[in-house]
Length: 80
Length: 251
Picture 1: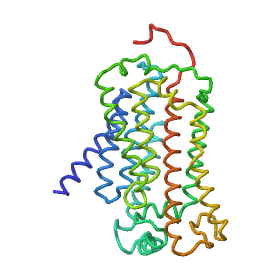
Picture 2 (picture 1 turned 90 degrees about the vertical axis):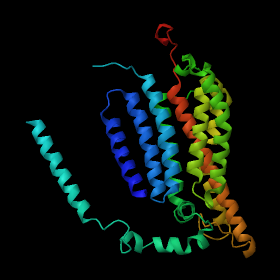
Picture 3 (picture 1 turned 180 degrees about the vertical axis):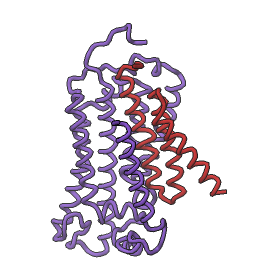
């Protein structure tokens, strides 16, 4: 059971990380990074590092996402 | 030609890194160097020596207190860099794109913010206070405080949030952690010990544990307030627009 969950979470990690890197729309990439950090937080709990899980979810999932969104809205969104 | 060279170099680097990964000791092995040097000491005597049931907090605040103090200085330096690029906003020109977006007039976001923010703040204070006994601590709780302030900024507008937490108030709160570290560190030094020993040799031995808990709480709250306020300051600096905006661009 735990093994299956582990595999599913790892696949989800790879998918979200690749989408965050490769997607053309920056907002989608930022939201994918946020989902990545949530999944990573779950992974940290499974690896018995709850301290790190809290820091990961709050710092990357909320604060970095907000900073990125604020920065994206202050720049022009144009295709080359 | 350039691309082929770059590809070759990347492949060589990847091969080198994979080769090094193969040489790493197996994960979780009891004979690993990380499990043989300081970790047994931390796990066996950390509770007694550091006075925290959460070993991570003991390592962060007690064994490696200097590290944490340096990290707080790094946060302040990062904030100084952001202020140097984006301006400190002392002049109170309140202009931000979230003030002209429709988000803050949305019933859903306002209700969610009103319901969520008190719970987030309560949880962050819980995480800070119980940081020495359970997972969490100053960093995580402070980041949660910052997240709560961010949600309120998005829901109620930049001007409201900036008036609640003006620049001169934030400026004082940003220095809390380093002040707390110097206060706690000097308390140990004044009593005849080393800097950051959490001990006052002149005190009776029975009060020593209470004193240490109080000092740890001071540090946790200092770190928490500083992290939360620095996150808020960075967000305000990112949101503020000094130029007056055109209505045509508002959509």
